[in-house]
Image 1 (cartoon, rainbow, N blue to C red):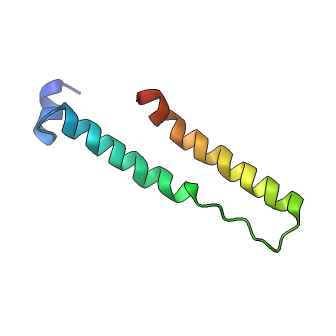
Image 2: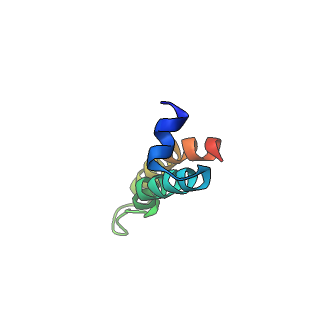
Image 3: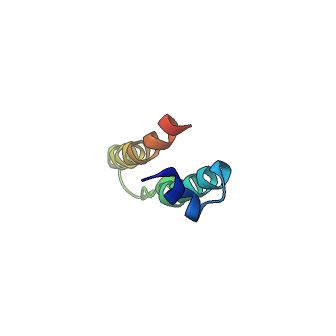
Length: 67
């Protein structure tokens, strides 16, 4: 994509970065809520929370590399 094409949609670099970060927040925010059932056994909750955290970091990592 050319620079000219990008600036048709965004007036400057700050607006582009702001839009990109807002989009990433929309994607990552739902993954930050832990959904472990308190009635499940401890081992099950740990596995669920570990899997959910791993998914969160898989999605969030590209943002960390960007900033």
